[in-house]
Image (cartoon, rainbow, N blue to C red; front, side, top):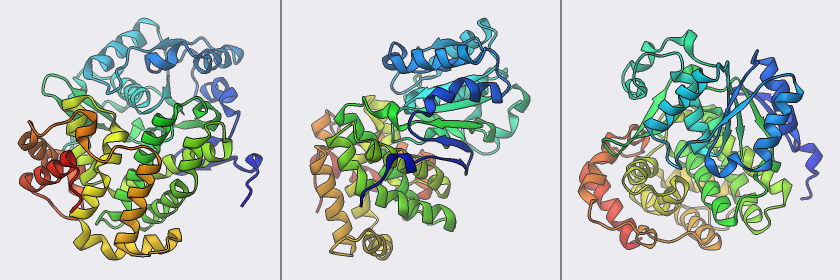
Length: 392
């Protein structure tokens, strides 16, 4: 089916206000003004800071009569110090709002900085455990405009950030409802320059969000429905986005799939993320690539309780073999087409810390959404299978 790129545009309000469509990055300054900002701080990663898209975003602010500055001291897996440094830059510049600009690292760091500019505590005091979030001084949270530049994390529509606690080598989820950006400017054209391997890894991250949300045991029919369509969009458009990065229809639909994934995982995540988070903290590996490699191993471990629902999903997707095995084979074929490695060993991860990984996985909040509540030993077994490439 031929899709007219002009038809892929709209204003959405679930879960937040989204201004979606090619060319809409030109509206960044106006959107900041709509939020009452006069001097926003654009927070991004070093790789984007010198690119025209950031320069253009600052120019858009200036055209709207706003001052703007850029903070880019953010690691690929952002750490607590990045948040502290961003807070210091925000206060030193007298800023009154945050533009969260980038992929998962830039967006997560920016949202955490926006949270912390009005707090007297440490960022990890607001880890998503118990009622920690209720201790936030809500009036101190800066307004947030989000501008995604990848199609994977969906952090632009999330109420949390994943920040690494370097002292303990643990990724922690920082949560508060006001971390949800008030406006998202989602322009698929900003993703055109992404290299094929990053497009593939981030796209598989979007798939993992939708898929784990779909498999979650929790009751959230709206999120389940969103996840199903998000998965179909990945099937139809991720290969095209990887093979031709200038395909704006594919780029648009993958940005939609990414946003849908982060909306859907209100229903929960699972074992892929429970393992990917500690592996990211311990090995500083790319989050989307970790999820992509772990995906079939976690599906196989959960087969006994997800086989029927994956058969339904396979039928919706139009797979010739509408069964668990048919869906698993589609995942394996997709990974091969995208040049995703089959095992963790291929990206330099060995079994030396296997027991620690299993223990950390059980302590990760995502483990609570896995269809089967796995023990540390069972997570260790899944991890070892993924290291060796054992899909039996």
